[in-house]
Length: 318
Image (cartoon, rainbow, N blue to C red):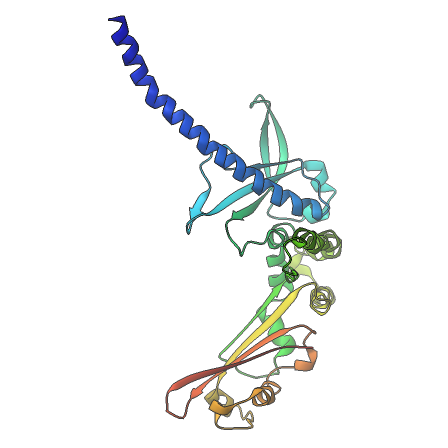
């Protein structure tokens, strides 16, 4: 009787124990992933010269769910970067960062709380396109807000597209992040990455005045002088190869003819670079573009077979 009872208890406990062991294994995977995620984010935060009070992840121990899986092994991990309240107040790049949220952080197993300012950043594993430096510029330096405020498509069009020219489409792209220029040597890759990320601290100092102007209480009151100055600061970074900038233009041959723009050769099928350059010079203030600007130009037309066709031309401004 006692033997049956013991077997019954063991039978009940075994699946529970199995689940516990599996859970522990899964949490070990989460812990490892959390450590990697925190290490990557910590590196760029410290490269920016900032001091965080602490780092944590929503997925560290499985309490708040698991990493979000997409496309096979790709995993997205939210990393929480917490800053002391007094430190935020004395650090403009954080003080004027609208992404920071005030939260009550539990301490000593929940018996006490502490107010911190939290910035949520993201780490993506198993993704060759993920760049932790890009994440730093996006979240710490608010690159998206800087671009939309000072270098919107309308602003760029007014600066570089000749008056009254109509286009099928026009768009521009500006990135604070310098290009990746690795030698391809795996032995020096980490050294090259650290060198590339070292610019963050300088950029925090340089861009803080622009970030201050993003404060909702002042952004609508910027005068023309401040806007032009901030635009010049951002565009000079392109000249110095510290940021990237490109414009993309599309038109069609009927639109060209309607606006009395001149072409060197009516047979677009046979156009060479010089034919594109001749037309483009009538549309874009090329001499005003910052050095290192990437320009893409496309034109649609009816080819010799009376079919829709499209040709493109691109170059870097030197």
